[in-house]
Image (tube, rainbow, N blue to C red; front, side, top):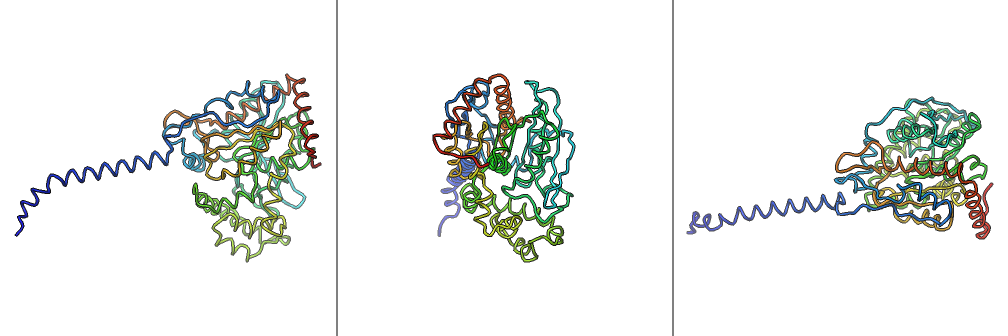
Length: 437
């Protein structure tokens, strides 16, 4: 017979050592996963800048240090694009202010009622001029979103009036007055807001700002007709995808968890549309029926929702036509005002292939600067030392700093302006580009 006590004496000393080894291996595995997920080994760096050497670009790099200095996200989590995106989506911003504004209602030709919120400046602008930021938020967003409120408050304190579009159907407790909602690239409501501002404030100059989907809308708006660029000083677009057709194809992929983000955004859109179910079905001119809404219930992606609902608001015959006609990629080359395009390399919603569009544009167009940060996620761009982020983000500050520089350029450097415009005109003539008027 085996000596049980002897066996225990034989293997006893090894068992604790074995368990200790397993614990160490488990701890090492957890630490490895944390380091990989949080991307802790990644180094911080200044944004990568694509631009043409012009008097304006040289002036901007002297007066906009944030474009060329290191962007430092919070050490423990800020290098993860997923956490930056998730915290933006859940929290919005830290210590969000509550700017006071006045809501304006604009009747549209098709019976829709566009709304925007108007916020007057707090103090005088550094140039002494009257300047209005006309802002278009991201998908399904409005002026009450935390990131919009933070940006508006910061801009007001720098002397800017702010007008913020509320996407059609996005405001809670605001009924639709026509059988349609906002879409990926419909510029009608944004155009109505800009027209109101121009008429109400004849002396004001405009700064065009778009976030995510809003970036697509504002760039498309400026490129649709040359007259849309009248009195516009510059345009800033942050975290947009440029081509809806290409973006939706990448949204079906699992790398960077885009398929999961697709599902989450689709669920958000589904709830938003269904909150207006009675309005969409009750109007005689609606081409949305019960069958369309039934397909909506089972949708798990934005493409399915776009095909069953969104494209029908504007009578597009196919999903491909909807994506092609609503994307700014076909209009953005017509924009001749200074244009800053900002994206993040670790944005989980924007596939790297989409960034070839702004990169190529900045390589060819002297009025375009493309800034690509290493970190920031989707509309995150939090800054901070170790754990807690600052109330203002890199995004908030860089937009205002760039805009301030453009305002002073327009006011103080008329000869340089002419030189820059001549450079732009020479480019258009040499390439044969014609503007769609």
